[in-house]
Length: 120
Image 1 (cartoon, rainbow, N blue to C red):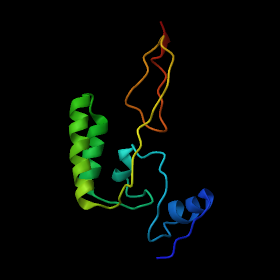
Image 2: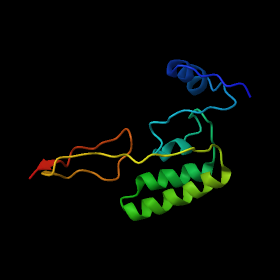
Image 3: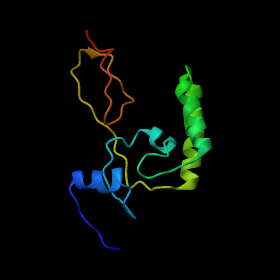
Image 4: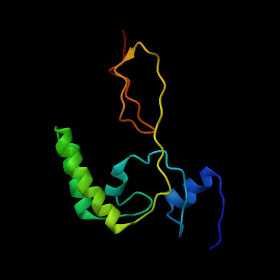
């Protein structure tokens, strides 16, 4: 195995856009975004119709509990198929002032919804 350490712009060009790789190791800033596994056009090319259908149904659910069940079922399929492997997922840590209310707790690295914030 020959390892090439490249700048992120090179990685975007070679791996992400042109899918020219045998193995890629990258820090994904969207590691909590399950939608990539339902998109066969995403750079790792995972294509499972059942996962795509479950994800689409989960995104249409008005009920969070039902949506989570569908996503968990899809995640089990992806885990079983093992199209990629994770080395680690880190927990997002956010600091806030005491009188700030409405801060979301279930967040990922790229989404921080601020619509519900208020000072008490």
